[in-house]
Length: 341
Ligand SMILES: Nc1ncnc2c1ncn2[C@@H]1O[C@H](COP(=O)(O)OP(=O)(O)OP(=O)(O)O)[C@@H](O)[C@H]1O
Image (tube, rainbow, N blue to C red; front, side):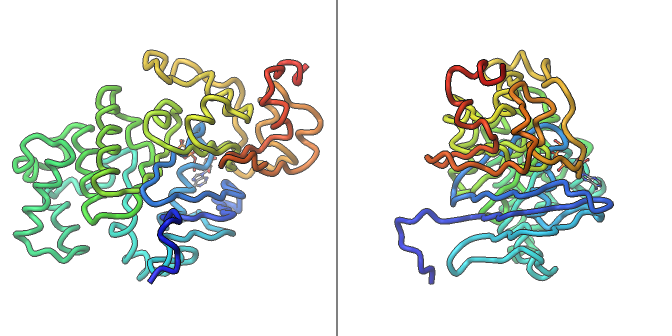
């Protein structure tokens, strides 16, 4: 039995001080800590190469062959349901992946077998993981296809991946991902390849499923607008580190890290027409690049000698907010331009 009192929010995932290296011991993710509460929706946002996917893959135990968790803890659930995923063995992953952790990625075709019908692939998951009979697995699959908004779900059951559009395939993958009622769904750029209307529909679907299945959601995207519409809390990643975190509304209303401010400047929030038109000037650091201080300093309008003098810790700003910037107090003031002068 859980020893936690009822009034305490329950934890779905806790990642502490995660460090991931790739290739020739290049540290691509470092000092990453965050918690996702039961039923909470958290957005992980940052430019390409910032370490979002490696962070998710570490949580799912699906790092590339050259990837390695060097340090940190990953814990799923709480109380009696706690599972330590750090250094978990295959047996643990088999009990967790699909059952307690679901995942949807950007390219659905690469996660589906082209020679099997999509219905067979969902029904097989239900038969193996939930031990349903053939008949029950078929019936539940059709129900799930209907739930994720596929028209003619009984007909779709018998179709092969190549017969379905990108949006339909993503719905199929979402149906598979939620079929065993996982506690946490990780959606890594799940809507990026889809056109704007379908993207909005899939995000709506994820929001609905969160409520009906009491899902926690870790939504990975490079687009702040997606987080603004879907997530209660936001984690902003840059150069392998979390540089700002907090309640989405507050972070977007008054970003405290210059990188978040720069992202806001190129975001499509409230204006889909701006999609992908702007970029932040300069290049992010390569994975493993050795930098003495702030990793954003070379691109930051406010950078000074202080920023590169040594490692910059995350500052707790209260109200569940934090930011990794030596100017964090000055940047909250309206006189931000004077700071950079
Ligand atoms: N298998 C690998 N071998 C070598 N380097 C890798 C590997 N996978 C990722 N990296 C590097 O690690 C860094 C973080 O990559 P990651 O894929 O986590 O970023 P991301 O924020 O998810 O980017 P994107 O939005 O493009 O998916 C990048 O510099 C990337 O080039």
